[in-house]
Image 1 (spheres, rainbow, N blue to C red):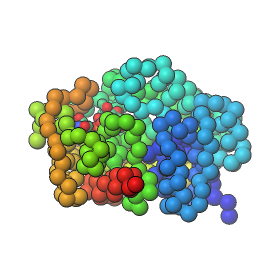
Image 2 (cartoon, helix red, strand yellow):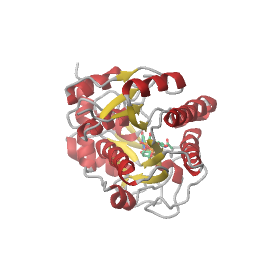
Image 3 (cartoon, rainbow, N blue to C red):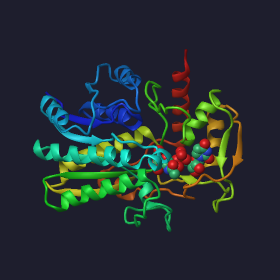
Length: 341
Ligand code: UD1
């Protein structure tokens, strides 16, 4: 039996590589397209270790119409999960055109090729950043989308609008945008995980690198926020739970959605954790004492955001299964593997 081939753009990245595993486990054949501008061959080696075979991978740019067309034909692509995008908030403010060109250009090219090739199903990586600083917590999909505070965030918002518009125009496309909360952790084997280039911006990779002695002390960005312990609250979701949400969304499109469909879903655990709680949980789980101090607030941070994931549970049959403790243990195992000489 031939397995349905799913194109995973950005499939060598953090979420993409874990989703390739989840797809393979669910009986799909992942086909990766990645330009390796912010990812590494290591992810492919890790996939080979986990799955026992080489996942096909095209080292190409997702903005290139002819290349996409060729891959769709050659690999008999049946659906697409689109991760390929630039994602650094700070850099996006310095390089807006590069971000808009890459993140929106690749999406438009992909949609054109999907229409040309009669491939209707697309899962799009969106972000809880579209909710800004929410007035009511937890946030549901009906919570208002707020003006983006970064170019990166705006590429996600405009991306969602493009998808809504193309479906509203009656095109034969079935699309789900997944609004991710904060993905953390790694595959429990330690073969794949997050590989940030340079100094990590995100909390958990900074923690694991600091614990491994690669970085100095952790700075907690502000402890005077209106939260129970004064530090910001986020919804940290294990990357394998997030990966499995993509499979659930794809299956939902294939089963239930007629031939013209657009929807959005939150992908979070529903539990908020503060920065201090993450630090303390890491210490408990790993037995490592972290060196940290409190610094000033980071510009652009929201105080508190966590998901109401009821809609995903009810309509996609998906719910997060793994705890923050597991995520931090897995992130730490990965850090140890990465650093093994
Ligand atoms: C950030 C992005 C978001 C993006 C997400 C995933 C911003 C404003 N938001 O989310 O758009 O989708 O990453 O890449 O950049 N923290 C510390 N010390 C650190 C690092 C972080 O205290 O060294 C705190 C932050 O203030 C925040 C929490 O940890 O409260 C999580 O930060 P981070 O992991 O960077 O994620 P977000 O800012 O939530």
